Image 1 (spheres, helix red, strand yellow):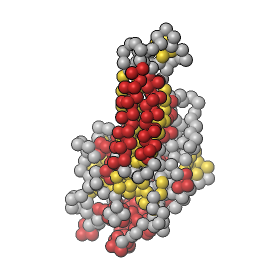
Image 2 (tube, helix red, strand yellow; image 1 turned 90 degrees about the vertical axis):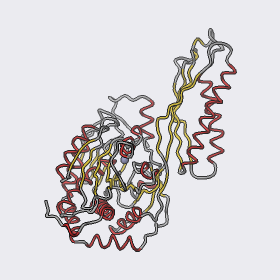
Image 3 (tube, helix red, strand yellow; image 1 turned 180 degrees about the vertical axis):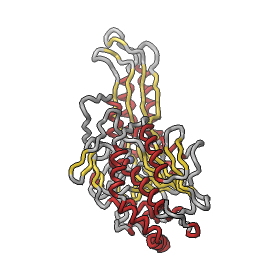
Image 4 (cartoon, protein in one colour; image 1 turned 180 degrees about the horizontal axis):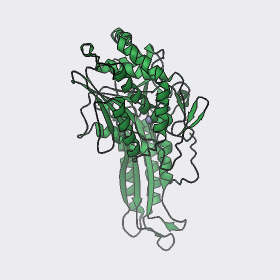
Amino acid sequence: MTIKFPSRLIFSAFSLALLAGCGDKTTDTSENKQDSTVAGRTPVAMTAPKLEDTFKAEIDALSAHPQVKEAFQFIEDYDEQTIKTLIALTEIEAPPYKEKNRSDKYLSLLKEAGADSVWQDEVWNAFGLVKGTKRGKVLAFCAHLDTVFPEGTDTHVQQSGDTLKAPGISDDTRGLAILITIMKAIRKAGIQPENDILFIGNVGEEGQGDLRGAKYLFGPNGPKIDAFISVDGSGHESVTNQALGSHRYRITFEGPGGHSWGAFGLGNPHHALGRAITYFTDEADKFTRSGPKTNYNVGVISGGTSVNSIPFESIMEVDMRSESPESLVKVDTILQRAVRKALADQNKLKRHGPDLTVKIEMIGDRPSGEHPESMAIVQRGIAATQFVGGRPTLRRGSTDSNIPISKGIPAITIGGGGMGRNAHSLDEYFINKDGVLGIKRALLIVLAEVGIDDEMRIESR
Ligand SMILES: [Zn+2]
């Protein structure tokens, strides 16, 4: 993917690499042509997933429910306003670790949409609770506040015809906007859920954030969550039920450094790094030739000051991903072993001075895992997709759902409807083509998860 940035923005090789790689999304451009739920996810089930009769019946019954029909009508009537919300939110910058302004605005939208209570946590995840009558189970319904774009990026939305162009407009401001519309639809139609729906605008989904918002939600200070749906990007056909895990490291070999002639014989960090890459890639190549799909990539190398200086440091950044948690651990072990061996071997060649040392920092850790096609939340995703006329596909991706999926908590990621393209680039755009289908699909899945309390019909607000 080509990423163009305004010339006034200056990037380090590192931040650029993170931005470019921040897909954390598997790359398959063919997928972008059909459904860009989460920019560039690899379709894993090309045959249609199996829908069980009970879940089809459940979604059919829900969609025939008079209040749900009212909610559908509201979603259609409100569509212009949904787009206005999308534009307003897109124009509030939300760079990694700097989501507070957007979080504050989102909190006010959640309140205005009719949440029973709203609050923020200490990482600036924004919450709006719609209470259920039974209050047994809590469904977290999320979209991420952050974008991959650094501070100073022009987020002004340019409209030409039906195309809305701005960085972050689809990934994931579209998700944020439809959550607001769905809360309003529930309120306007007087739908009383049986269980709680916790609407969340969460921080830190993208590369640099390393899912920190979702990690906080499922950490010791997070709320009770029994099921999780994240809306990420556009489209109304894919259901991500499989989490692609990744480990990322920054590895720094260090030594005293000196003149290449005068200090010759000192340990050379670049030489150690070169060895580490050779040892690592030789073994990793053998390991990844078979078994679950696993990759490895040295994406950045840096260090050194001049051609006639022994460098004092040599740095590489490494990304590894796998469909299988075991394979991810294994390829990680291969890296660690290669680094230790390179250090020891290079130190044997040193003729004087102190030993080289190495620092290994983990800069990314996303767990993997998957939920079976038969799990209720996955079935509801398939059924609702079919109901709105889409062709459901199950996918593997790296999204906020990685965290609950890895913990065995029911979770899926879906698109927010419409058509988004060029995610993570300044040329990102969104077209509101059949956008309401994605909103209706999300509403159906949410209501199937929490249930409607028919005894407690409430008057429209
Ligand atoms: Zn996203």
